[in-house]
Structure formats: C-alpha cells, structure tokens
Amino acid sequence: MNTMTFKGYTARVEYDERDNIFVGRILGIHGIISFHGETVTELRAEFEHAVKDYLAECKKDGIHPEKPASGKLLLRVPPETHGRALVAAQAAGKSLNQWVTEVLQHAVETV
Image (cartoon, rainbow, N blue to C red; front, top):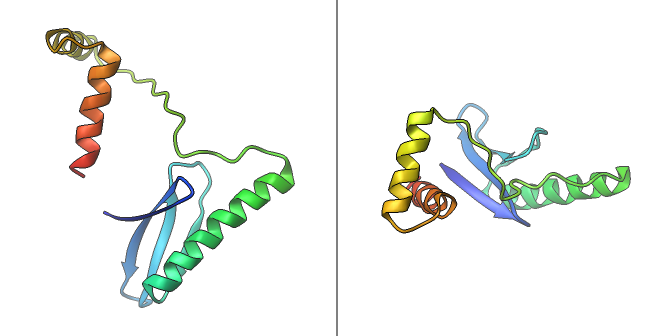
C-alpha cells in the first residue's frame, strides 16, 4: 500500500489508469476526504491542502477534528484467544497490553 503522511494524518494513494491521475484518501477518520493530482508533487500539495481545509472547517464549526487514532483500542476476541494471548504475554514477562502493543507494532511494520 502506498501512503503519505502530513500533520499526523495518513492517506492511501493509488493510481487511476483510466483517468491518468493519482488519487488519495485520508485514512483513520469517519469522514471521506479525498484528493487527486496528475503528478506526485501535485498530489502531495493537494493532500496537504485537504488536511489544512479539514482542520480549518473543524475550527470554523467549533468541533474537534478527528484524529486518526487515540491510542485506546477495545477488542472483542474469543475467550480462547484472550486466554492464549494472556499466557503468551505472561510467558514473555510482559503485561497483556505490552505484549499486544508489540505484536501489533510488528504486524504494521511488515505491511
């Protein structure tokens, strides 16, 4: 997956062969914010402009802009998975939170 980041926001970037443009969409927020450009330089500028516009609109409307992630993650997993993860964490001498954080970090680094 091709991505770019700006001010803590990440966008997925794809090439649209039909229209001969690069298309991006900001990830991790509920709203749909997309942008496009014919060159990488234009795409980068449009991405930054989209983020700045989003932040300005939020300020104008008096709302807090969504952040891609708060750092809190609530998961629902089968009890067997929860138990096995707890045992694995304890075997590694870590809290479940520390162990899961490391496992997730490793997973996102290999994407």
